[in-house]
Length: 182
Image 1 (cartoon, rainbow, N blue to C red):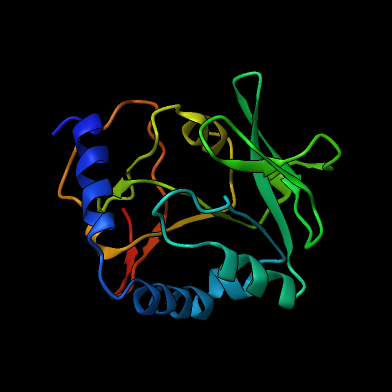
Image 2: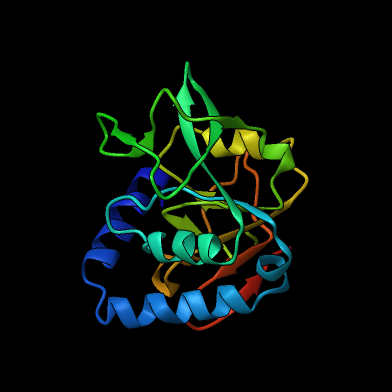
């Protein structure tokens, strides 16, 4: 399958997902038990989009534990990260993605301990199909912290064409397991 077909297939799979809240809670339970989560003083995470696993509970837990949270914003075809606090104003892009407003304080991703990477589909080797902009692949090329993705089991696929610039995540946390990649 081509990446465009995979995106469409996974969207259909996620639209049909039953017991979503229960499965999300299982994902959170697995995530919060990981040493990479426990040891992280700062996390980078996206605000969930469309029918992805909800990230708000992860952000709330991070704040509760005193972790710094940063979220991405695309500016001039480049992804940059900004501090996200409980009262931070957000703006919505044309695609419906919520991002920090112009008053947000920029933070370097290299100073972040754990980057939770979004995606539509994943292989067990950690490669991902995103929305097609390549933004995460570019920022992860120079990132040396820990990377993982939270995803429903249905988002795991056997294979797709991996391109030279694709950056895999180190772990994928699903409702049924933590996949250690590579």
